[in-house]
Length: 288
Image 1 (cartoon, rainbow, N blue to C red):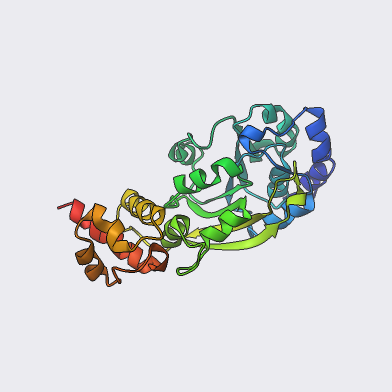
Image 2 (image 1 turned 135 degrees about the vertical axis):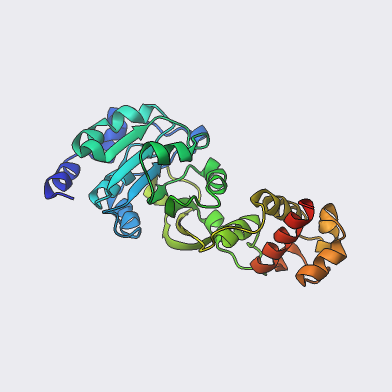
């Protein structure tokens, strides 16, 4: 990126001043929490690595703190998707100095068809980056699984307890549906924690940034919706033995024998590999 563009970004009004100028009070119903400290957003974006030849899809840029850091880190192009139209005008100064690098779309990320975005902007290698609204963070993550071929990495902010559930291992209390769905389809890791005091308004708990990379599998041998159904049923009854929960899918003892698990174990004791075998088995059975 040119030194001139970096200088222009640095000379923009502070994020706190942008919020005041455009009267951008955070909406509780949209789970809006802004990061004002650009040192923190810079740290997050540096952790994403080199972006020179990468398109970035940012969800919920808000007043643009993370967006500034993405541009300053030399991203090839940024497509910012913002549901709240109040922020569109506030982002205009950033769009003006970055010219064609920043594309702003006033749309809801939960409803947008990303395939259309990929086609329209000729995207073949992109990152999704977001300080996700807490109320829809899990919904958005599940919407992006399995990660599309056009996306090589997700870097997303969650409440710390949600992030810990995502990366939890079998046999632990935090291991659950999210752990299995993300664990089978991605390599996920927490790359940093962000204290609650870094946000405005200040949330009740800390946040964590999680990096997801797609697993090197050309095609999954199970139907994603079946894996979702299995994990939902088993973890909704996590204190019950799996032989009880698996009745929904057929002969529970036979299923346990086929995937080599103890019928008396609980959902949190089933490994990712066994969940995958179970999903494949039930997928094949339903296709008969």
